[in-house]
Image 1 (cartoon, rainbow, N blue to C red):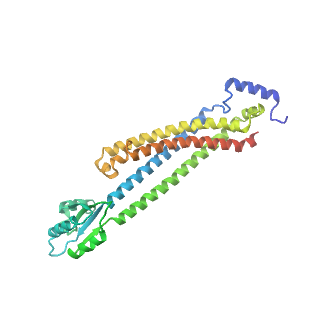
Image 2: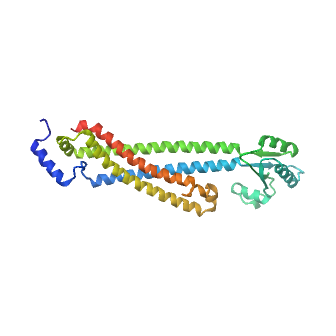
Length: 318
């Protein structure tokens, strides 16, 4: 029989192997290699799970912002010489209150308007007598919105210098930004999973090369490719599951920390919406499920990739 070692060597090595391993332990333990692979899978799983969670969170926040923008329009009255702007503000507000589909009308005072401009123009005391447009916030029913262009034309006829902004430009930009982030994140997830698969391929090949003589012994005993592949598959599935669980746990801990930070900040809570990242909300539950699904997917990926690698490598080893 053509072989790299004779029958007696095979027999002695087989006996030595069986004293140290069970018949199901074709892959000899290598703590350094296994821990390294678990660490790599842990890091990649954390990044992938965090990316998946942030994609869902960002999509929900973007949808919330778009809903807020689409449910409110702004009436702007520009100052003109000789204009009684307070009177025109009240007239415009009364007209908007009579429009079907308008649920709430609120006039911003001069002081409120100046405070909104402070981030760009500085303190209101330094602006002097600067003439600035006055604003009216109008909330509309998103299920039965009024004809905004027609209302804008009516306001312009009855109160010259009046314009209405329905935030359509900002809504389109926000939708474009949200879609771009989702596509970029999906591409990132694909790259992360590809890197994970490549790491498992190299680890599997290294394990097969390191255990070449053991693989030959099993071949001598009559083991077929499917049995050997199944043993490697179980081994790397366990490693992938271990690294995946650790990465998912860290991602969930990061999400909990992020929720704690948002909950403690009035500005962030109003911006993102506290219910979006609440684990008991529909979006929060979807994020948790997505993170756990990523961990399970990584372990399944390790299992499938290792099995495919074993089948493609066996002919070159034995």
